[in-house]
Image 1 (cartoon, rainbow, N blue to C red):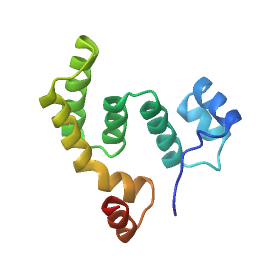
Image 2: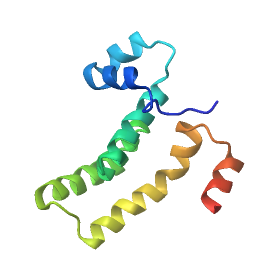
Image 3: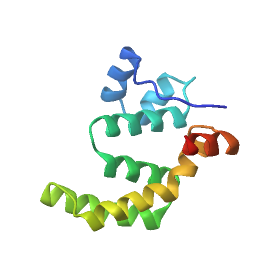
Image 4: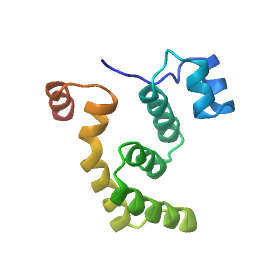
Length: 120
């Protein structure tokens, strides 16, 4: 099954910003946690908060080594307002390591679809 975010649904997005995750998923019981996480991810990416978006995914996938690294990188980004090139590269390396999980486990792509998408 493929999952998508619901960022284009105005009513859901209003509730998304006003309700807790638990309350939201109870109210919209036909939505999955994956769709909720994808929406959180899309909102963070749209707001240019890549580090927080990657942190969200690592927390969802329980990749605690990456969680700690991203917390450190994000704290430095918050402190200085930008990242040095080595920190950007470290963050990008984390994304490269979790990208397959994002596509196959969260978006629901098959292995072949994932390989086709990254090759294009």
